Image (cartoon, rainbow, N blue to C red; front, side, top):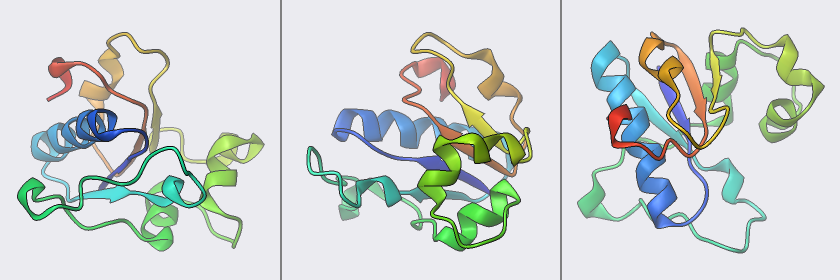
Length: 124
């Protein structure tokens, strides 16, 4: 299973989805989108839920926990943002280190949680 974190404006959301789709197609893993970041985020709305995008299922907190290999009841956003992240399976959490091209994304096999903007056509 590949889960891509989606947040930001529609352009960012499309890049994040496309990068996740590229990994999903290359590895044969199911793709889900994590839109939990939009809770309490008033600057933008989730825009990929229109029928013409054909976006896959939205990931549940249980899906995210399963991919990251974590238990407990702490909110996923808190786990990903703090010291908790060090306890995750390192191969399951892929964080874009900068806005420049990241070769690491091409070696992801899954299961994986992708967090970043992934603004390069080379990802997909």
